[in-house]
Image 1 (spheres, rainbow, N blue to C red):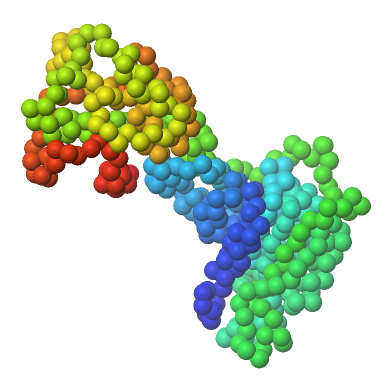
Image 2 (cartoon, rainbow, N blue to C red):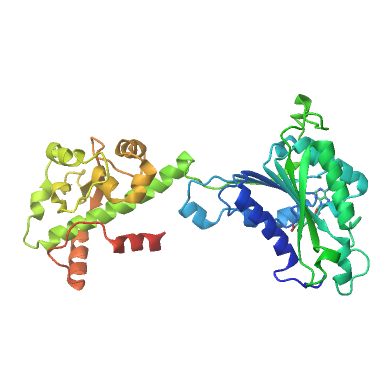
Length: 416
Ligand code: SAM
């Protein structure tokens, strides 16, 4: 069909659903006759939606398009607390399947006109009598508009079994409501030119159905024996990464902690090198490290975000270069309390300092001090050389303070 609409008619239909979703915030949404999954692909960006299901008889179409519903790399790199599961099924709307019951919204966009009238009866019984969603959006061509479609003779598509005028659609919809306990509002998308709107209506007519609270006397097919009907074939399912998932949360937290430990170590080295003939060696500690004083300094600030505006040497220390079984590496200790108070993301993810320690305890990538109060970051002699030469380049000021900087934040964004 020639596109006489801008935006294109299918986009207007999908936008209608999206506006409904924005307003009504359904959590579980199923699209019947999902075809190329175009509507589903847009709906996955709506944070309210937690379960998104597509159903179509045409399994080949689903298989061809389903990977477009996979999470994006940014969903893995920067997961949020949103939760989303996507499931795609091959099956017919004329058959029941328990996995499609109890949804908040079921959409059927340009589907019913592909069904024979007998199958349409089954559709009504399955959708309104068995799935019993809170709301249903059904769109179908309005045959009265066809006179305005250039070059059209007959139906708009060769597979259409019928095309209804407004009275026919409304009569069917009202019968469904009375049979299954729903109420309906009529609207549409694809406006006729001015002056013809009343006479032909919308190009796609839409019924928005809402389940009534008191529907006891209606033909509801729900029964305990119906619970285990599984007639659809699952073709695709995926869980989007979410910070509600413990593994995802740990993965993101560990990468934040490793990043910030490195950043804070570098700041500390910068500060030491800035002193030139200052007291770098004063921070080195051999053998058993006198943690007590340093721990106390951190712990007195453990209750909330702290401004560590002062110099870092009260909080950081470095152990003996040869202590680690003959290696030339030593470690800089970055107290968790410092990291927790400086790094908003670490704070957000861990919620409390105690929890941060707990979450990092069994992480093989993170080396904690013996008492678990600090992250130990490998220190190599070249670290200091690199920082010194960086400092010469950047005209580092001796007065620089070890404080959180916007530049660091921007680097982090870029790295992600
Ligand atoms: N809803 C799609 C959209 O908005 O992009 C377009 C739907 S397309 C015009 C009609 C779809 O209904 C086709 O993909 C077809 O395979 C599917 N279909 C036809 N009969 C069906 C049935 N009994 N059960 C499920 N899907 C069916």
